[in-house]
Amino acid sequence: MSMTTEKSRIACEIDFDRNGRQAGYLRAPLSRNTSGWGIVEIPIIVVKNGTGPTVLLTGAVHGDEYEGPIAISRLSQTLDPGAVQGRVIMMPAVNVPAVHSDTRLSPVDNRDMNRCFPGNPKGTFSEMLAHFMDSVILPMADISVDMHTAGHSGDSALSTNMHDVGDPERMKRTLEAAAAFGAPYNVVFSGVDEGATFTSCVERRGIISLGTELGGWGRVSVEGVRIGRRGVDNILKYFNVIDGDPETAQADGSPATRHMMVAEPDLYSFAPAVGTFEPCNVVGEQVFAGQAAGYLHFVEDVDRAPIEIKYKRDGILWMSAGPGRVGRGDTVAVVMTDYAPSN
Image 1 (spheres, rainbow, N blue to C red):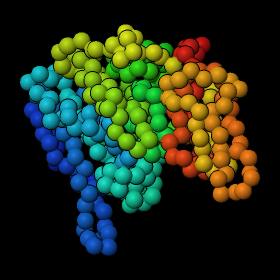
Image 2 (image 1 turned 90 degrees about the vertical axis):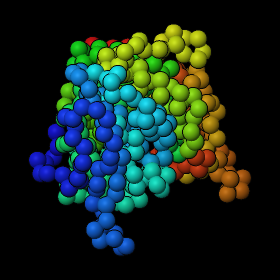
Image 3 (image 1 turned 135 degrees about the vertical axis):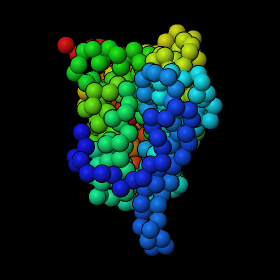
Image 4 (image 1 turned 180 degrees about the vertical axis):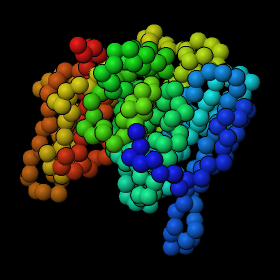
């Protein structure tokens, strides 16, 4: 739940209970040198008709992640209110300042918004916006799809992702929703720092929560956009918000999503020093324990030998480092294994 019951400072012009299509902006106050009473406009589109569940679609919580915002924007411009049974809340560019600067962190307060939940209405810009999302938007949702990529920090095999929430029935429903989304992989993962994420707030409310990782390396993935656009349609179909059956066939001929997991710390590999990282594999490849994940080079130091970084487990490479230059403690590889339910 939110850390406070205080009212949000963000103004919203949308009537979430009104039928039809509404498109407008949240108005988040941001006092700055050039505008003491300035605001940031955050786009929001709501389509509602009849009875049915509420699906929340969010993109660009990080500003350098593009595929989700494109997919949500396309849906928001084409979704026919007459074809909807329920409500679809679409926020393609949640963190507008970060979108404008093409950065993961907000340039306003240098914060990662996805480490600021449940937020604070009197806090920094990122905390204020996180509070609005948790206290105003989330209570309306039955399912949340928060669309991400690896941004500039890495590349990712195209996937949905989720946590093990410890509730067998909700796990079953979430796994089924992920299968309906239809990405090549769905990853049940334990992250390095998940307690202050948007996902953590969704899960605390008992809402079905899916994330995505649809590319990275600071570019727009053609296949990532295709999977993302198909996936949001599939979710609406699966929950009977629009008519139709989900399409889950994969480009490699597989008929459905492959469920995976990242459940152990040794599936992560980190850089032991500052240097230039040379990866040995691309995401989606089979890798093996003891195999080189890559080499950390010290190109500015004469005759200093590179460090070989090895995988500790067999599996499929889910994430790979993006920038050639890495710092000590940066993630350079994440391996996923086939999903096995916890007992």
